[in-house]
Image 1 (cartoon, rainbow, N blue to C red):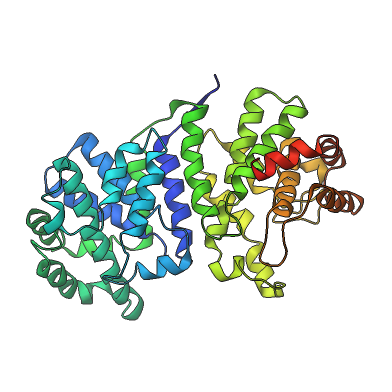
Image 2: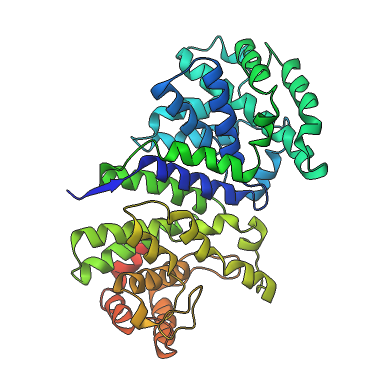
Length: 408
């Protein structure tokens, strides 16, 4: 069994970075919520593992949000179906043994205290969920002042009073009292600025070290990333899974080591995480992209690198994932590397990405059959775009490659 040394906090932080991209311009929401929740938790006297769980749940509380349309609604103080993303997030976290204990907190982080207090749940879950709900609403209220007045201090009393008005109804009285206490200082509000909240989170990151994870544990974390990005568009549903299966299969055909094949699977799952920054309408556009839209799309592989680069122990996975749009002749993006600068694993992921995309329906065309896909791949080889050896391998095992790509 392959063992990886990974810092769980780094993985969670990177997942938070990915979730930040969904907002396109409204970034660091999860980190600000985590900071405020931690300050309130300390005021409540919480310590140790309870605080760490609160911080992790807070930084991941919106993991059920993939679409920019849904994310834009989060900026409203209250809206219909606001609990939908809570349920999705809880289901996602339940698939990961290392994060499943956070699922109930995420599930109820938009539930009013008047309802939550009588539910058959552990008290720590109720308090953590309601704490996140409260400071989540604080951050939403803060947005208007940060954007319109550029000075949050001018709006702090109005925000504090709006939260206090919900004391005992939406929010637990003790939590509101804790918030009212910690939010008295200017420092509390000034710390919400990006550079300060990032520094606060960096301290949390430094408090844990790498730990051993087996492949199944690591993959369960990675699959949360891939689910979030694949759920962004009905046309990309299961794309990452297909690329992952096909990449691993091709690695096995090339007789790469077991650990390389496992890392190829992870790279396939992670390769498109940078697409979370793309507006939904762009990914669902039925026609040809304009030059400006194509330029926007071109940044997604670099964003994939930016998100993943801070997870120590996944350096090769990060590189292979981020290079999936590089081409053999150097005409790809974002680095314009050619075959000499691309590991065989990166070339495999690039071919698997093209194959799976062609095998899936897209807004501008229907899904293609194996022989049609092979014709396009061969054309790309002749043009110097894809690795000839990898494409020959696909051709020799075409039916199985197609089954891996589409999940048969």
